[in-house]
Length: 284
Image 1 (tube, helix red, strand yellow):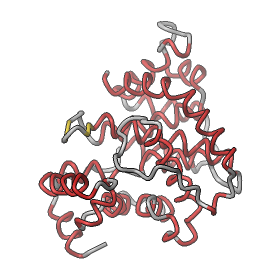
Image 2: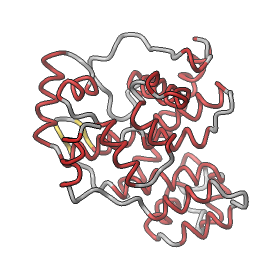
Image 3: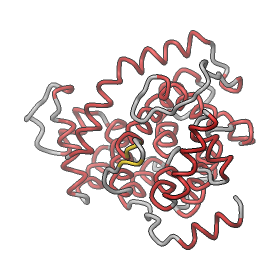
């Protein structure tokens, strides 16, 4: 990361701390004694989060509208892994504040994109095999664009110039950022380091647009890279402009085109569910 960028970030005193609930869940993911009771205990420490989990569990999609009145019941309805992923996602949404609009790009749109990438990453990891941890890939997908939230919040004048450059050069926003010298990937990696996330997680945040630069973490970066492309193509949440027509399939994943088509089909089937359940949770 350029020293000049580090200095600018160090002067910005509004970087969010890692949400405590997210920290507890990440610790829980590493514990061999992780179970529904321990997850319920974490959720009960955060009343706002607990209310959102109950709201999702009572949504029409799960067929239990108005019948779920406890966190333990919600975990039964939604499933242990689903609730764990919801906690991480909703904790991050709380950490980065209310919805805002910047030249047509909204905070809610960015989050729905991140949630889409998280879901797509989990599906890709399951299909690719090769020792991938699907839940870990889900978390990486949620975190991959955290730098963009900081970029939009702390560097608004730069973002205006970046967006103007994007239109002039008809290129994706990430390319315009690099041309301008202010990358959301580098900013995200800085925050990941501040939060003391794993080296692998930090690498994914930094190299999700350039997986071949990630060394031994290339396969995980490739998962997020592919998931990111698919979600932009399917317009899940915020969709980037001026993208290449095709989808680049990283060789490091050992996937075939048919595998990608299957993942796309699964994402399409989940698209409305993702938008409805998460948008409802963000709005309430």
